[in-house]
Image (cartoon, rainbow, N blue to C red; front, side, top):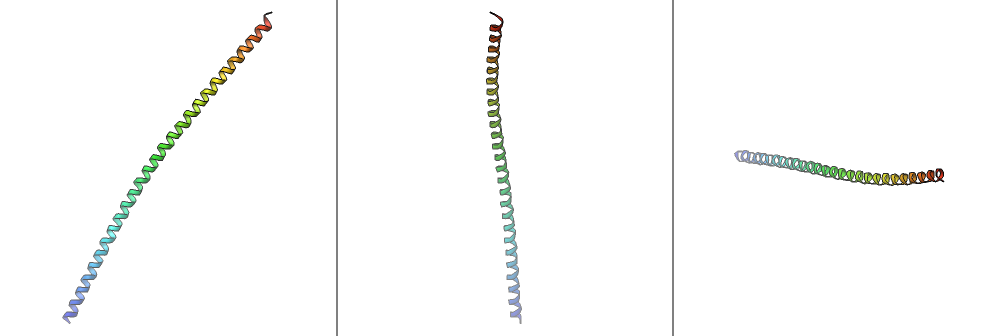
Length: 98
């Protein structure tokens, strides 16, 4: 009987040790999952910041390109208007002066 009780106590100790080992493994897995999640969040934030920076640079480039084109168009329009005014003035002078 005492041998049976001793075996039962040994089995109970093994079961408790296995439970404790399983608990530690679950805690380690949870800690690893939390670390992976933190790393993923950090990486996502870095990617978002990089994307925002690229978007800002592309927006600035497009604005500069549009500004440059608008300045060129405005210059060309002023030149045409100036030429037309010159032609009109010459036409008026020829019409008025014999």
